[in-house]
Length: 279
Image (cartoon, rainbow, N blue to C red; front, side):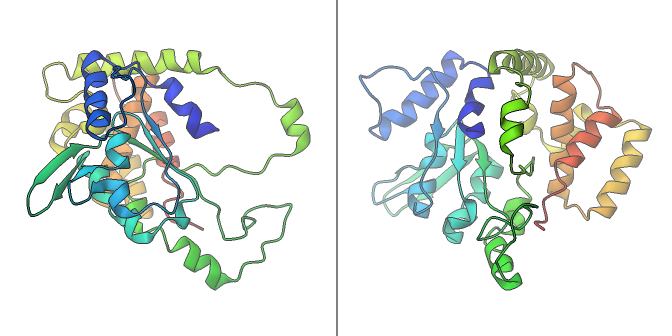
């Protein structure tokens, strides 16, 4: 439900973005009534999908799910149930935001700038962290299950959130959260700040920042630098993990309307990396 509602808080498509998405669906034979696509795509393939269908290919190369989700959302439910070979081919599109398919008679590059959302249980039975149920899985079963998600793939994910089980009383009494329209206003404002910041560059949002540009736009103060240094050592971060925390902190600062990354922005971004090593 959360994943399906995610596109509703994303910024509206620009004309150029709509045309780009429409072209991809057109060459895939998925365009209906020759109409321009005006909504961000949401793709949710079944876990039995092959790696060719996921990233694209075939005798005559066609876009896969990563390209059909371009500028939208790719949702992978029950992540460990996907073929490990299929998951591993996601690493390059996530990093490069495009996928190149080479065949004897052609070599084609399709765009693949998507927001990846995944979900999984902590173990095969699903009760490993549930205080109300006893987990019946053996340590080896848990290790094998979680081992289907490789470290390099986890390292490419920015936010990890554990969702606890909900009781009936909580469902009935819990106050309602913000509506998508309210959240979207903050997202639009943050995107506008990024557009202004990068107006003279060939990028549009924080995720596209290179390490060199991050030295300019993700510059940390003394307190933030000290925090990041301690976290880098204690969490044994990779260079990719370090850069992703800074980009996420820059986005959190934009949502907060701050010109600089503050300690609270950095702390929140670090908190979301706490589950990169599954328990």
